[in-house]
Image 1 (cartoon, rainbow, N blue to C red):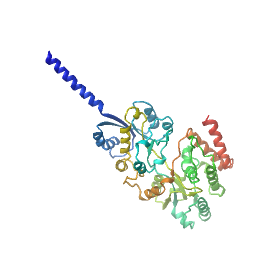
Image 2: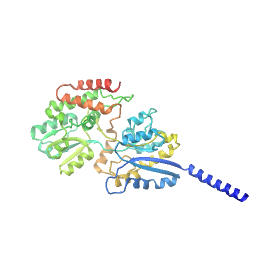
Image 3: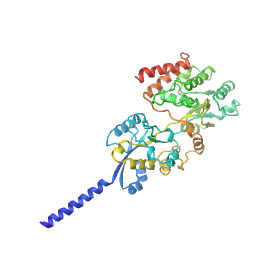
Image 4: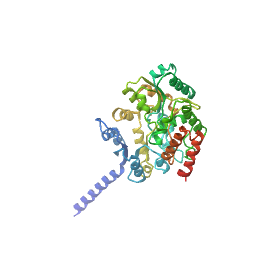
Length: 412
């Protein structure tokens, strides 16, 4: 009987030891959307390879979940609200996540050297304590593309730099060729799509900020007025006609070799021009009243605020730093999806010319900050700009009408 009791006691001690060891190792959950849509290595296999050494070095479990893009924002928002959500997460739209304090502030976990390594750190959203909450990736910028053959036909030997020079070049093309000088897609189905390439880049060139210190949209200012006056001048000079309000085929006109200038996302413009054998070039942006500037988009990686409650904050940040490291991102770009580099230690170069351009104009790339009611606001602004081109509103009235809507329909 004593031997049985002794055996049971020893067994209990051993089981207790196993339990303690199991509880001692931490467990991280990482949510990342699918990026592999070809025949290459599956996303889950790729990410598990990247975390193989991390698991051993930190004596922890890392559970990686690859999520579909469909309803992705809702999925991560719900997960970040609950205790069974991710510790590290890929973020697309961050407004509601930051507003509801669902992301961990990162500043206190970063060294100055690490912050300096992240090229787009200044574009990351801040929480109420003023700490950055994400590490932004570089999705590229809206660039100005031009058709070299049309410019040669018009006798334009030097590219326009300033707003005035650009308008003059467009007038010259209209007078000396049968080609279209410049187009914008003001007939796009959403305000977000229209403003992405047709308003925000020029607003940034005018020195505008999208939101104020209270997080409210703030384009009813001198920069907003200058931008609208600049856009309306294309109609006044006969560069745009009455069809501009329904225009959606800007890119098609460029690939048909009949459009001289268009502003569009880098990959979209480069890929379509090459595919259609257009003799093209591009430059970062026009130089507006406040200098150069363009719109960029930035998806990000972040740490959940609840990781701190679970005692996982430091480990989660360590995992985050691994994900965005030059070594891992180089492998990501090579094996899953090609994007411009967003860290100084990255060796991968998607396009040497683009890489040099983004390095030079790094501080001129701006994001359209998130704010309450943004899709509705952008749709209203688009509609009022269409009315401006129809002669029904002045540039100032566009701002007045848009902000009356914002005050009455969004802020209330």
